[in-house]
Length: 365
Ligand code: ADP
Image: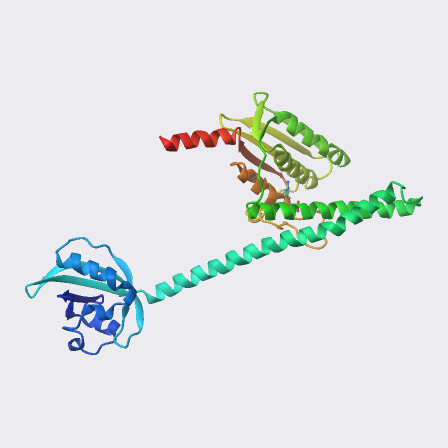
């Protein structure tokens, strides 16, 4: 009466079958199976492997591993089982004592999960491909919008009035903004595609940060925000992709200036340990609520996504720089308190290439 299905095999035939096994085989009485070849109840795909196991068990081999296979009911319908077996002497004959469990439902769930994963991977791939293709299509007309606006504004297509100048200036600004968004989408999709390469060069970290902050100085001045740079003088050169590095710093400082009210401050600090540099951008701006912190690195996520939102932007900046930092073998995180301010910190190896060579050497030994 064991709840587990059990049978005994000797000479390749059923010698004993318990009630739970009878139920699974769809058989009314044990006499329908006793003396019948066990092989008939195994799916053809598994007969070779089962023959091998029976062989081992009849030789009194103690260890055969548990396996998942397919059994057949008396009417021929297959069902998935998990089987364990040990050698036994039954009625003076060497044979095997077999325990099995119906796992059809578990297998169905497993198959459904695998299918769902494939569908979602495919959807994700098509989405990335779609974004990449559309972005390219959008860039072509945008180039003429920007190009001709620039020509008109420069007066190369004839004189224009002050009012026309103002409107064309707005067209141009919007054009640049749109181009920026499209480039970010393209960057994110090429990283997802594995198509973005890093160009490593050795560069002076202090200069790179100062250059980037200089680009933000005018925007900070407009809001009377103090931009403070504090870099550990020990840090000299790092080996990384300088353009991508500047992009990370630029995006963080840009956000800090954007989300900090008039008269606030933004402090950029850089320190290093023996393997990594750590760069922090801290502000005393609006801060981020705990429940939003997890999501701000997701593409298109903005804490305030209402149509009347006060701050411009796309929600793509942090998603992009998160990936850029990870590509460098670094990490990025944020600490923040609403109303008090935010500190974004990222680390990157001082020399990622060299570090990888060292790791390779360690693993070789
Ligand atoms: P966006 O283009 O909207 O700035 P990001 O991906 O750069 O996109 O940022 C996503 C969201 O994270 C922002 O919309 C904002 O809600 C929040 N955020 C980012 N940086 C800061 C910051 N320094 N202070 C407060 N909120 C921030």
